[in-house]
Image (cartoon, rainbow, N blue to C red; front, side):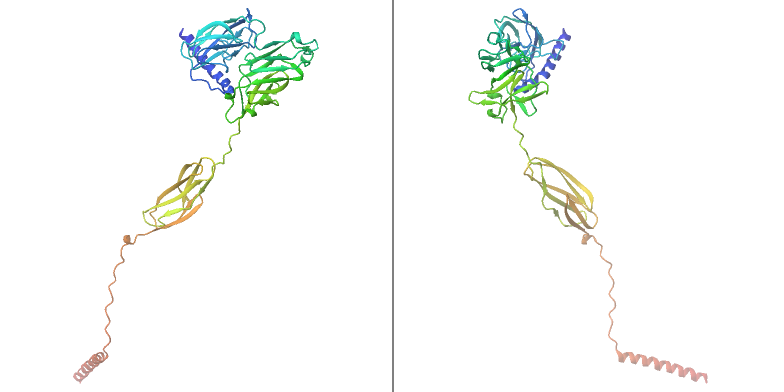
Length: 428
């Protein structure tokens, strides 16, 4: 029992992942709760329901008309599969309370079956319906077309929800494979349509017109009623286009369309059957100028500093572009990287960027900030220089007293002469 519960939960998660894109194509966001998925056998009038049959769950708070609800039968007599997670199941979403009663419909006809909604569960439930006449979305034309394919009366065919309509004028030639007359026209809503171009969204449901290979001459008129609330923001109703899916090219092809914005309809002429839908091209994203940065004047304070004193280097960065951007402010001193700052500046804003540096060697320094240049000087502090040793002043020089000097010299000469004479006298 626990293993089965785990399998159901895993399948529910997988279903969630593969169903979200279908909501995205319709422009409807999936609700928060995990969906309840259903699968099983399906019969109409006691026979396996054919491919293209629509199965829908309804109930209070249930979201309908989106991917997964209704689900389109892709294998005769069955919808979804427990063994194949890629087989589309009936996915019941919405703001649904636990235990809410669900009722099931086949081609908009009640089946009489009900079930309770429980978030995250996967339930097998077989469905059957009794439908008189052709199923909704099918128009029989056998009685109004000749063996050569000539319509003897005008034909108005429509999808089961009445939103897609085909108008065929009298005397139109309608053939299959070029030579067989049409017997019926089917307009089947597609559960998981081909994805539109990346710059477009599908507006509402997509319809597959059958039988494949049917052609019309002259062309028939295809009319589609759209829901204005599903048109993407920024797109006007007059810009909607009808498009057909080119299977061979794997792409959508626009038709020349005419929108009636008062009636919320769009029309185009079609000459063959394929898959059709209404497409809206998203408006281009506004072109914003990239971030562009400019630098104001470089400020250095002080320009003359003492040893060990802080020097502040500042510059103002302005973003003159149209988008926010990042910018690296790089400080180099004497050609060597000193510091850097990464800043984010919004469009039209400015930001002041400052660096602080300290130098312990005297001299001049060259500054570079992202190409802006400046200089500052570091000087020795006079109070830190030891005083030079004092030199005693030379003795004062007195003026020469020549009379005294000659008197001294004369006295010396006289004494010397007397000593000489005395010495000579003794010798005799």
